[in-house]
Amino acid sequence: MDKQTLRQEFLLKRSSVTMDMVSLWSKQLIRQLWSLPEVREAQHIMAYLAMPKEANLDVFLAEALEQQKDIYVPVCINKTEMIGVHLEDLDNVERGTLGIRIPKKPYRIVEPHILDCVLVPGIAFDAVGGRMGMGAGYYDRYLQQIAFEKRIGIAWDNQLSEKALPMAAHDEWMHKIVTPSESIQCSKG
Image 1 (spheres, rainbow, N blue to C red):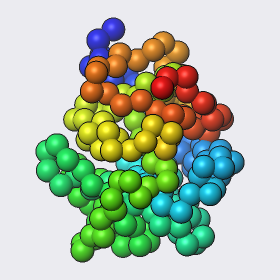
Image 2 (image 1 turned 180 degrees about the vertical axis):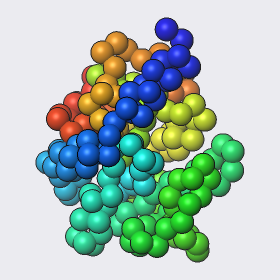
Image 3 (image 1 turned 135 degrees about the vertical axis):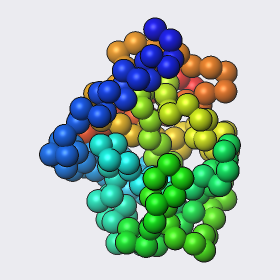
């Protein structure tokens, strides 16, 4: 199956998730995240503000902010590049490119080497750490600046592919995958 057909198949799975499922699965996902020492001990965390039906981290972000952790989220600044910007709170956001929630300006940009871990969304993941995104390559380019062991893919359980995902030379791999039901130590790398 080609990459675009596979992407559409997994997008369909994500779109079939109900808002009740999002609520329940998000709670389970957050418990899994806090169970990881590399997340609990991290001070500088890059995450993301979820789109509807995407693996939602809003409660995790609120809890991390309460713990005085520095939280950063991606902002696309052109058609090929994204930056990590500081998130003060979940109320101080607006809609950016593609309707994605982003912090309001002015931005406080984080240098990638400062980050302790990066929570990475995707359309699909596999057990060896393969990731399929939306196809624009924003995360792949950004992750080139992030140490492999700091990359954690975030997904619903129905976004795990039983077969290896097709990966191009420029596609970046995950160190771990976290879903509502498990944390997977990936074998790639």
